[in-house]
Amino acid sequence: MLIYVDEVRALRFDDGSPVTAASGIAPLGAGWLVAQDDATVAAWLHEDSVTPVRVLPPVAGLDRFTEAAGTKRLKPDLEVACPAEVDGEPAVLLLGSGSTDRRMRGALVRLVDGQPQVQVTGLGPLYAHVAARLGLPMDQLNLEGASRHGDLVRWFNRGNLAAGVSSASVDVPLQELVPVVLGRTDAASVSVGSPRVYDLGEVDGVGLAVTDAVTLPDGRVLLSAAAEDSPNAVDDGPVVATALALVDGEEVLAVAPIPEVDGHVHKVEGLALREVRDGHVHLLAVVDDDDPDTPSAAIDLRVELPRSFPR
Image (spheres, helix red, strand yellow):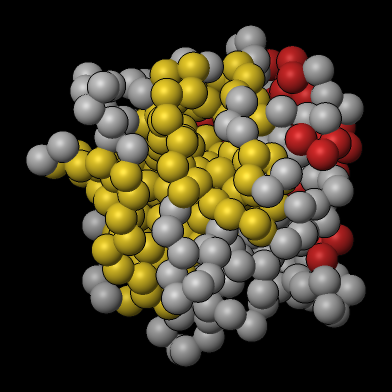
């Protein structure tokens, strides 16, 4: 599997302020909705514009949270952006990481008369159910990515090999999850499938762990992964390398490094599929550099799949 970086662009809102900590991306209307894991607002990329979309109310009067300011513990940590539907209309499902009690909320963003409309609810019982299915204590839960598989969302726990936690996923039915986020049913009613576990290897002694996922037309999945030297599910650490992995079920078919750009390792945390054409998968990726002063990057990635796995 070969990976090419075709273009890298810094993301800024129309007022010039940076989009930071981009952690998930999914189509919204004719554009893309980007989740920021350090903020209560998302970024909507559309018509050569980048506009804020309020997803959650301010926390302690703040909309952005940093470790330097001592406010990181307050952040909602929205890590997942996944395509969904509300009453037959396209929507984006945003989900928190679950790594603390504050990070267990879900939001649905859809367009009404061309403008984003958001509904939010707490999902604590669902996160507890997911942790139980994965066999993890709550303080090891760190749900960072998701891929859409028909009527299912495959929800990925990042894992941390240094802490003995492998990357893994569970399937959750959309027809059960969407009504919960809309406030129509209870979070405890959502069923959670059996776990899948992924062995992605390591780089320089640091384990690769899943940061996001996207489903290919043939049903296989491309995972983004980062080798981040972090002691737990909350603290950041140095990122040694990033990669994409092609998986079929639990089987890892191929792993390849994402090329560095100007000597810099970009920690890809969000993946969206643009198209599959001429034997190449075209992806739009977004980057969280764990730096509140650096605009997140949008990267056009092109993936040439191994010829031994043509499907």
